[in-house]
View 1 (cartoon, rainbow, N blue to C red):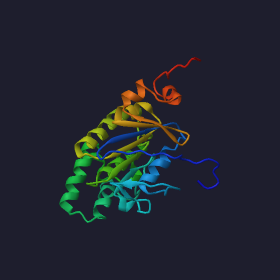
View 2 (spheres, one colour):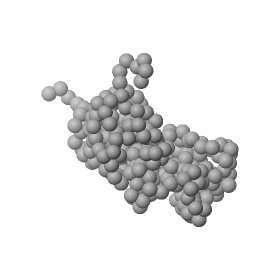
View 3 (cartoon, rainbow, N blue to C red):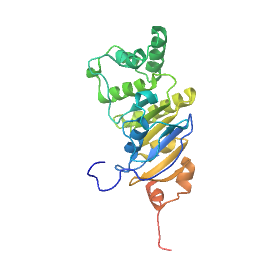
View 4 (cartoon, one colour):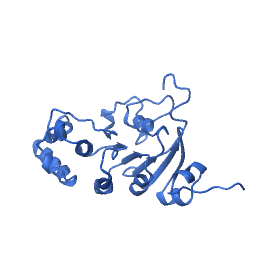
Length: 235
């Protein structure tokens, strides 16, 4: 970033499979959100390429990448109702009303927020707003990917497990490519098929949750994963 002494993200190369639940795990400042914003098109890489289906998309806008992104805190139209917020991305792409109604009902039912349908966003709690924000990201069909940037930060602890399971179920049923950024190892290891562990702008290891836990490739990974983390002795 301008005026920064060190790069936010160092040179790296990796591939996310179509339809994969992929986790990006690291402490604050590791470069997770920067990486996500490069994928979504909010940032353009200083060098190198971002590719979707082997097509370079560095200069392709986020809208044209067919990406949905959920931020750490909800981004919604406060003056509109829940239903109107969910309708917006579908109406903007000229889906017919029958499909829109069916799709919205499906999302409201899955997230168990049918009772909020006609309420304005400004009347909702932060937790309810984030549920709507997640619903808005999932309402469009045939997405290239859904990017989730610490989406459960505003969610009550007792609801996190349930909501994570709902997201995973939707991901499996619809074959979505879902990329989940978090600093919480439990969220990453229980959600993703594979996890990338990051530190100081570097990806240190990409592997299945079991391999990350049992066979860390890096000292940081060993100390970061597990509760308590791995012990080290001079040898």
